[in-house]
Image (cartoon, rainbow, N blue to C red; front, top):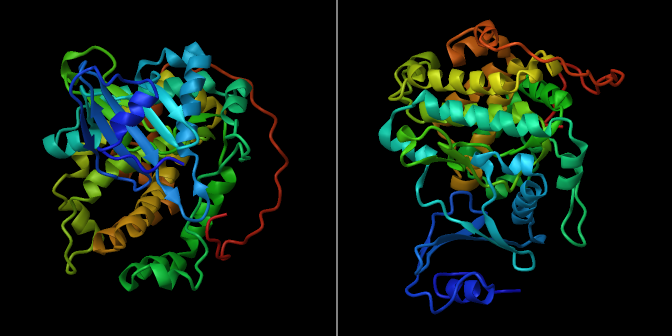
Length: 412
């Protein structure tokens, strides 16, 4: 097993892998912030003006090396195997090298592109052109792989000597609460679990969502603003404004999940700008946000409209598609809180507001469409062109669900 890569040994590794020559000239390596604490990321500037991103997974104490980078490499292999996907410019292949033994992946570094989250934070503008590009790109991937057994089987490939499930259902609530939680979660963060337990309707809504999860196409499964890059000259280009990156979690899944997690990432901009005060009610705090929801809503609507215009068949296949997208938005907000507790060990008043909002979205999705998007569902659907009818799959027999409305389920 190779030692962890660093700015001191990464050049030698790239030379050994045949990705650069020590005669190319000067080299420079920069360590990137570990936003997800899963990977070690280094940007290497080569003497021929090329830049490479080198990613290495951290070793887990319990199960050795995880295989998320294998999944990203497999996705890139899929793009090469099926040109119809590789021709989608926003997800074009970038991977140059994959070392499964040492869990290292090298891809081209897009120096002309910016992290979309940072772009929004630094500029505080939300051009609908960007959201439209994201929606169109995502729809192109979902539409091209829709009900395609060959894509599903390809992504089911497991690392050598390993086995994995082809269908992972990400529609999960929090894990079952056990005594071990007191050993690794600070006391102030335990309030999240206490509140979550209190909302029986929330647990039932998440259980329903997991039950209704409908894998039918290739999905990103970790789509957020950090995983979208925007071209530095986006306002001067006619196409390829964005790139979708970090396909480590991709697999055969439910398209509504991708859209829901993307909407939740936009909502995070609004929620992170809340004015938090013990004397303010939730509604008052939401209205006093430094970045008003009204500033973001046009992008939310543009993203959904562009997606449905590019993939109108999905409304024939799932007549309640937008409602399910909104439900997944609420679930993604809960996942954001979980990630915050896991990475930062914190749970403050802003997270309490986020949990309340997530609960409202999950338990009252129809009403939440208007409050979140600013328009009624019919307004978005009416703007879609003529829908093409697709064959309806034979539905399975409805089984009796293993819970009652009052039953406390923690996920599925």
